[in-house]
Image (cartoon, rainbow, N blue to C red; front, side, top):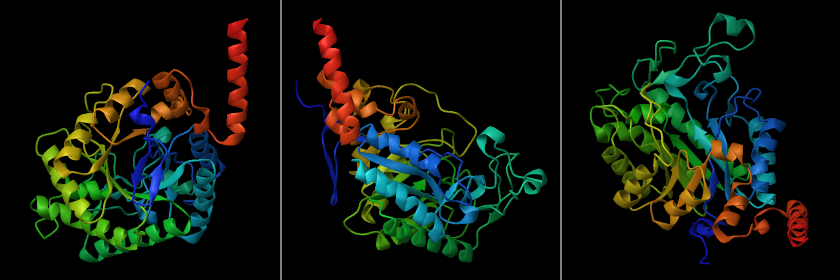
Length: 375
């Protein structure tokens, strides 16, 4: 059988990914003062053991007010960086590249964890030791009625946030990460600037597409300047807002072109998150966005969103619709997705995708199954 495209290596600057399977950032809302715990090590480590080529730490706040909830991971101090270094070291020691997504929640910050309702923090939360904080946005418009009203960002605020992204990128480098992804999707701060639905500014940072792109591009330029040249930079976008007057795929292609010119290597094509309007869900529903950005901006893309099985993932990569496949919930359901995909696509599982301790046991399992089949 021909070698599956999904299992082929992919070169990004000096980093070679062993296959095209990436674990998408997944918020766990379980950090303590922004510091990762053993939960995060086990949660992320299992994907390296399962053969994924690149594993991303969840959306990581570049400053305290950039968190979604009090349980978010952060990278605004050295204690947080030291804890994250343990995860990066484990991932790389077990065959996966280590990635981290740098984020700022903007107007969607200062909220409860999803399992606590997700609405804005209040006095009851403060009494439990989790007080609300001031949120920032391009314009003073809340995301929804049960979210805090943000403060319109001044030039000084924007400068502070840019510095926070810069310092977080430097800490990510010191912590040993191979890849940084800038989060400009899902209704968080950089997406808020990009979208006419949330950006009502009339200065140089609003008014038209060029103005709305200005602040996110300044963040990208700043991060790329301090992120080592040999290491790839990813960008996650919401390719469409799903409503009239919001971000369109044409806007996203234009943003991707500008981001590529500043040194972005891969665009991670998600969608939505800046309104309550849900997408129409189906397997691979966001793949057309990845294909459009790949073609329109001439840049590598990563497809994400209900890519539920190996055959669909293979069809996306082999068909030139995207270069990488990002998995979130399907990987939670099957941390060994890469190994199982090799069995589906080649007829036999490739246990070399797993690190040696796991491979040894898996090889013995395969021997036992062959013995049983012969009996």
